[in-house]
Each structure stands twice: as C-alpha cells, then as structure tokens.
Length: 533
Image: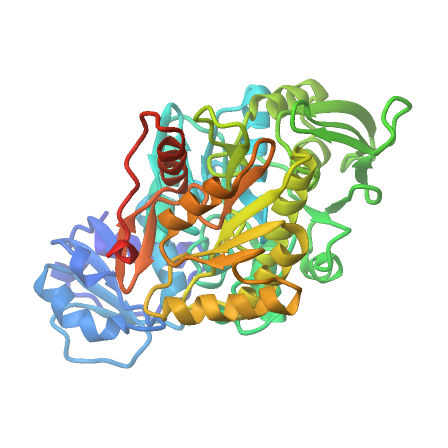
C-alpha cells in the first residue's frame, strides 16, 4: 500500500489526521509494515513513536529513519525531519489503526468476540471457541496461551497479555485469509488501556469478574474497572459489518462490576449468575446443589434463561473442568453463545464437553505418586482463593500450596495472597514468581508477614524457599498419601524474570522433575534459575 493510500484509508474511516502536504515521492512510497520499536524497522516501515512507562519512542525517531522508515507518527511537535511526520493525539491508538488499515481492516470481515475479566478469561475464551466450532462456525482465537488459526496454534510469547496492535491485526488478517468468520479475543486491562485492541471492532463481549489486580499499573480498582469497561463502552462504536453479526454484552450480575459495566454499555445486555440473572443455574431433583462438582466427574449444570429475543431455554451441560469457580466460566460462555448468539443447545453441550482442560489451569501432573499434584495460573488473591477451595474439594488429605508474588507489581497482593493461603491451605511454601529487579528476600518477607498475621508459623505451617525448583521439591517431600500439592502463579507461562532476564521456566516441567526425583523414576531435569547458584 502506498503512503498516500494508507493516509486516505484512515481519513475514510473517520480517523482524524493533520492534512500534511506530501511530495509526490513521499506519497508514492510503498508501505511494508507498521511498528513502534525502532529496532524492528526495515525499509518501507511506518514508525509510530509511543511514550511508555520507561521509554519514549520519540527519542528513537532518527534511529528509525536510519533503518529505512518512510513516515513517522508521534504526539510531540517536531519539524525538520527528512521524511513526513504526522502529529496525532494518541500514538497508541494510531499504531492500531495504521496496522489495521495496512491490512485492510480485517476485523470488519469477522464477528469479533471479546472476553475480559480478572480471572477465568482463558478458560471462558476456550469454551466459547469450542462452542463456535461445534456449531459449525469457522472460528479463530487469540488468548494469553496461544493464537489458533485454523489448524495452526501459534505461541504468543513468554509473558503475554494481549498481543501488541501490529501482532493482533496480523493474526486477524491471517484468520480472514484462512476463511475464518468468527474470532474470540482475550482482552486484558493492559491491552484495552494501551489501545492494543483498538481497531478490533468488537461485536460481542463478556466479562468473568473484576477483582483486585494490576493496581500497580492502574492505580486504583476504579481505574482498573474503567479499563475493562472500555471493551463494553466501545461496542456501540463498532462500524456496521456486511454480515450483520449480533451485537451485545454478557455481564456477571453477581460481581461487584455489574452496575458500572451496565452503565457504560449501550448495546443490549444479558446478565448471568449462579442463582440470579437472565441466565442462571437451576436446582434439579437429583442434585442437592445448583451444580454438582467432583474431581472424578467434573461439573454438571442445568442452565436456564432467556436469549436476546426473549425466548426461553433450559438444558444440561457436562464439563470435565473442576472447581466451583468454573461454574461462572461455563455460565459466561453460555450467556454469550446461547443468550447473545442464539446458537443451538446441542452445540453448547458439545462444545463444553470438548474442553478437557486448559494448559496450566488446574492441570494434573502424574508421575505415579500417591498424592495429587496440580499446576494452576492463580496469581491474584481471588484466583488463589478459588484454586485452594477447589483443591479442598478434590482431596480428603492436606492441601500444600506453592506460590510467590511478582516483583514490580501490585504489592498489596503479597500480603493478601499469603493470608488466603494461611486460611485455606494446610501447608504453604513461599517462593519466587518473577521477582524482576526487586529483592526476592524482601518480597518473601512481606508475604511471611501475611502468613503470620493469620496464624502461620514458619517451619511448621509455612516455609520461605527462594528457589522455585527447591520449593517444589520441598512440597512433594512434605506430601503424604492422599494429600494435594498445588503450584500456583505460573500456569502455562514459559519463563521467569530475574532482573531483566527471562529464564526458561515451566511449572509443569519443574513439578515433573521434582516428582521424578522423589520417586526415583526417569523425568525431566529441573530447569535452571539463578536462585540455584
């Protein structure tokens, strides 16, 4: 696409741009890519100068030009550059729209479903994805675990929330080229606040919950909630699409975020909840509780409600997922696919049954041991509480929890998560979880204070073990027949950050290594971390 054409496309769709005079030579320059990292610039690239928390892209404009950039967008007043410079109000949003325009706005050819929330996003996204496929729809998905495009599953990186805007638009374009008609996008608060999901043109959205998380970045719960709210507020601004997809939002009426999200949403809303809402769980004659959950049988729900057209429905779903918290994730997926999209009941049942497990979410690790061993992504106070409550349901023995709390992130979580474990676990091993440039002993000290405040006794009910591999070794040595060891906080992630270096790390591999050593059987070696030195 030529530069003049790219600019014209943005103006066509209502993106305000200063009317810069382009020479014939500049107007005819071929655009090959859009990026915000000067190190990735190659000849023909448009460079977008983004001001971040630690770096300012405006400082790297000359470097980008030297590498072959043919135009620059930024927010500062600049002159005298040898290539066209466009000053805009929001460079992050411009990065997304430039990326989308270069790829012919792929989201406008898809039905785009957004899934947000503090906990349960990946599970809910996977449930929706499988339901769409069961209904015969050609669907793709971008989650924090991977991007799924047809038969391809692409790793989205080490520590990934929502991919950056150029990557996101590239995934969408590839889905259009592969013949996809629907896409499920996991939308994080960072991704929404930083406009990584701008130009994704969402049609439908669902929230799982909004609890304590990322306050180091957003500053307050209200600001964090407002970032999540951008997904729902933006539904009304999505341009019309030729295939006329349904438009609506599914909100958790039993979550504290409900009234706020409802107030910012200007498209039809359906509510869901275990006992309340447009879509809910019904008690049945053969089940004493509204849902039945067991490690052996998973979850059985009898769901009832009405869809956007007011038509009533009632059917049963059976899932191999475990933990009462997954009832909300199931309801969220059903509210969107049955309530908003009106997909057939049979497709819902088939799609739910197809999800056998989510990588790093209550994932069982089996090496022949006589106790249960699980890996879960729980890295927030609410998620840890839910994971430990689920663990309690899965064993009559003791629950042994292993987890840490990230450096350079929300410090309040450290105390809160330790308090939760002191309350719900029998034994706790506090360890590293991406300490980054913070002092790991200081982080563990803050967590230890939380343990002590709720009756924890070091050396008896909890331990501080800086090396995560050694922490897992201790946990499995402590385990007796019938106990349950659960490693929380890393889940599917593939690295651990010490200083500014990402070291390869997978909790599942590390737990297998610890179990193999305990049992004296063949297994993977314990991954290296600098805490071993």
